[in-house]
Length: 171
Image 1 (cartoon, rainbow, N blue to C red):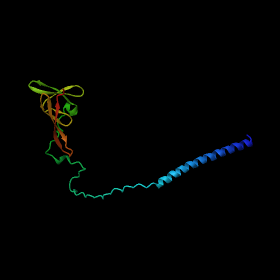
Image 2 (cartoon, one colour):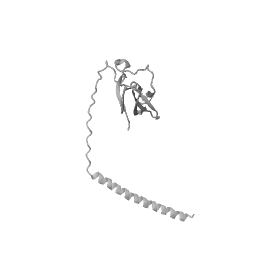
Image 3 (spheres, rainbow, N blue to C red):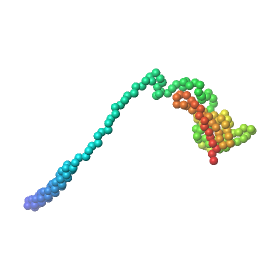
Image 4 (cartoon, rainbow, N blue to C red):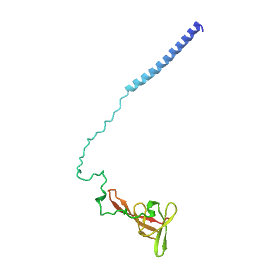
């Protein structure tokens, strides 16, 4: 490449650079003008910070009483109902009560049986006094469309309480 040609390319590149820089300066002038215009506008008002109320401490004065964070001893209510841990478990006690479904009644030999169906589709007969469900539920009565059960459930304080439940004949 000849030196003259190299100089002309160099000069053309330099000229293009000057034009580009000149274009940038006019953009900067527009930007400076916008900044000046923004500075001339009145400033907005800033809302004051909300008042911070001082924290009022509370002293715990129940040091001599039972802690609400510890579970009470199981012997605190000896007169309440208790599940009989010594008795043999019946077959229907392995199923939660809400998975058992009443499907009918059966009068046989003077006894009125309730018919309960488990999830596996098998039907079982129950009489008053039989145990069902996982919460020591005892069948109390059997009517044509309802089996009444009483469960013994934990009360959350280390004791137990009796809770009524029922299984109704499904349509």
